[in-house]
Length: 107
Image (cartoon, rainbow, N blue to C red; front, side):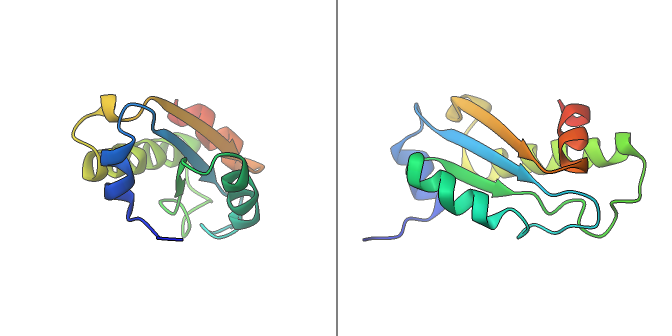
């Protein structure tokens, strides 16, 4: 099976791109939800995953700052892989514990 770079998949599926953002909990890191990512990728093989790492070193910070960091990370990810936000047709969020609160704040 050929492995694609994110940018290649984005160009191929630009109208049907489903971005799934995984956000770790308190004192977690971007690989905490890799089991979720692996299992979900079996159900949605064309989905693009973003394992959030923007708050890895600073989960003790203000919730508003954590949400702002996540929103910026998503924006930067989309900007670097797609021509515009319209390149992503659907965004789903999965958060563990504090990650869910950070997601709500970012939205």
